[in-house]
Amino acid sequence: MQLERLRTTQLGATGLEISKVGLGAWAIGGGGWEFGWGTQDDQQSIDTIQRALDLGVNWIDTAAAYGFGHSEEVVGRALAGMDERPFVFTKASLVAGPGGRVRHSLKRDSVLREAEASLRRLRADAIDLYQIHWPDPDADIEEGWSALAELKEQGLVRHIGVSNFDVDQLRRIQGIAPVETLQPAYSLIRREAEDELLPFTQDEGIGVIVYSPMGSGLLTGAMTRERIATLPDNDWRKRDLRFQEPQLSQHIALVERLERVAARYDTTAGAVAAAWTLRNPAVHGAIIGFRRPDQVDAVLDAGRLELTGADVAHIEGPGRTGAKR
Picture 1 (cartoon, rainbow, N blue to C red):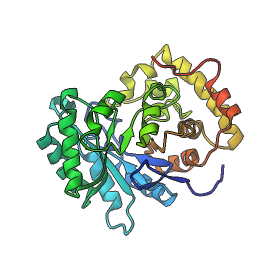
Picture 2: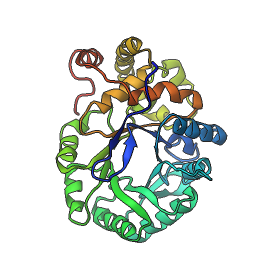
Picture 3: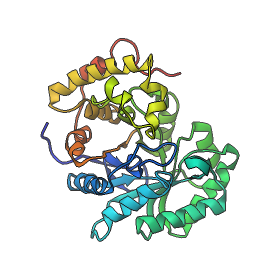
């Protein structure tokens, strides 16, 4: 599929004009922590970032938790010396705990320390979008959100948002400072955001960037039973039930339908899966975790592809795939 440059859209009321696809830097944080993707080649990660930017991606989503700072360090290296930097989004609230495990904190002092460390690793004067990673502990979300509002007032972050919050939690913090963006999980195999969350954000004018639109690799067409069996032990997906039976067979059947639609457009199953998420009018951008330069070109079709109603009906098949649980 050879089409024009990536489409862009306004991210809610932030004023940021973002490409429909952004680069997710979770995997490039590497292994050594409980949600790592296994060892990564840092230079390959840098080459991947630069390839995506060359092709029109204008934002990167990372987090302090990804490799406990390593992802941010790699992003900072990749962007060093650039005259025109892409937007960089990062997150707080997950800090390093014992044994490579994460610990949750939304205490003000912890959030402020995280922001300072992220700015240093990213080699940035300000963070374009700073997000609470998880609403945990729930009792502290007001304190954490107040800390983000404080950072925005200080000019250390330009915009503030949250990830993984539900509607009730969004309502609780809106009185402290407007919620500018939300980052939920959303894909063909995880559709619960459609029920309340996405309609709420659309009504409230909240910008939405979705993560794992390809089901953490399950919907790319490259994830076979054989590949799953050989995933390294430090890849969190090896322990995830979606990558095991009986769910795995359902997902492989879905990929076969995606591949049939992809063939019509000379693209990949993963690009079609991500394009499906972008059909939702509440969704402004999809985060895709490229790990090698040769993955970038085909998957960027997701930001250009216009699926038809017939395409969607074929992809979803009989009944609703990933129905609410």
